[in-house]
Image 1: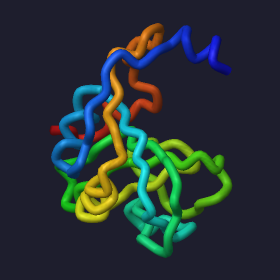
Image 2: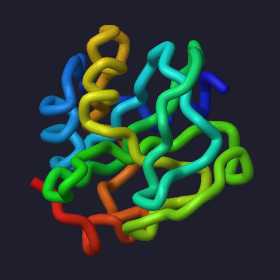
Image 3: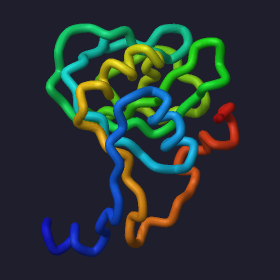
Length: 138
């Protein structure tokens, strides 16, 4: 894997410790692998959010932000595939993802082990899931 990884290095990273920092990084196109101990229910509510539940010492990835909704939050992709979570989705979010409330994201990021990634060599920014066209972003 190392030779493959060397083809696409991340040039810069920045520690992200709050919802506001995550919001700004995501609005500028920088994904955030989020490492925390926060677990979630395996179902989304009517707004696509998953309720915090239990402990997962796990890494996922914040990929989008909706800061202009009455319920601000970050879109989180889990590595467990598309069938682990069910329930309503919004903003054309991908399978296996869920929204995280801003105050929950704040607690996750405050654990101090999540970084925004930028300057990825060989990966031009693009709107992977059509989210930028449908979401209200800062």
